[in-house]
Image (tube, rainbow, N blue to C red):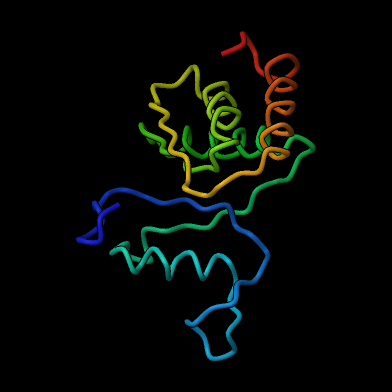
Length: 142
């Protein structure tokens, strides 16, 4: 995303989170993560009206449940492109989950890893989760 402006017609959908962020934006110094996200995106030229925080039904397999819910929303609204931004160690599992639910749709799925660093133990846990998804949850091993 460029600081020069946001491409009108695009929509940013965030998973609503019930946590608070220490922030310079409010007098009390604490705002919701959703509010903080909107304010940060606004710094990059994204109008607040183009950002939507949605509530997700939590399931045992979090990424799988989120992919199912957001994919349904994408189908209902007729979106044609999806850009996922995820932590580096989580990108593959997120991508196969979304592709699984969008395989009958003409939706292009793109994924970008965030710049955060990961610990080896997190990478190992994520690899094990990926294998569970591949062998037990994802149809046709996308």
